[in-house]
Length: 204
Image (tube, rainbow, N blue to C red):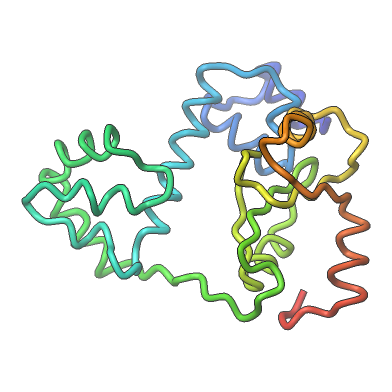
C-alpha cells in the first residue's frame, strides 16, 4: 500500500470521503482489499451511473431524445438501468432538459468503434492492477470491459491468479457451481498469448 493511500485512510490528508475513494482508484488500488463502507459504495455507484449516462450519448437512441412523454423504454436501453431507476429518472428529467441540451452543444462524446474482432463478444474484467492502454486495446478489438465479475463475464485478467481477492474468489465460485465458464489468466500469460504471439491491429 502506498504511503499516500495510508495517509488518506488515516485521515491525515484533507480528503473528503469521495476524494479519498477516488484517490484510491487513481493509485491503482483494488477496492476489494479495503473494508466496504456505505460511503465507498455510494461513491462508486455515483461514478458508475455517471459513466453509463455519458456512454449513452451519441448512441442511436440517446438520452437527449427523451421527450415529455413516458420514455422509460429508452432509458432502460442504457446498460445497468432497469424500470425502477428509469421511473425515477423520468420523474426529474423535465427539470434538467435545458441542461442536457446545453451539454450536447458543448461536449461531444465519441462512440467506441471496434477496429478488430479479437475479443468480439468477450466481457472482460481486470483485477489487481490498472492499465488504461490495455482496456482500450481490448475494446478496440471488440471486447467489453466490466468493473465486476458476474455470470456474464468471459475473461478475467489478474496480476496473479494465485491471489485471494474477492474477484478471483467469485470467478472460482461461479466456475465451480457451473453457473459460468470464465477464463482466468495472469497478465504475463495474456500478454504472451494475445500480444506477443498474435500482434493486434492496434497500437499498444
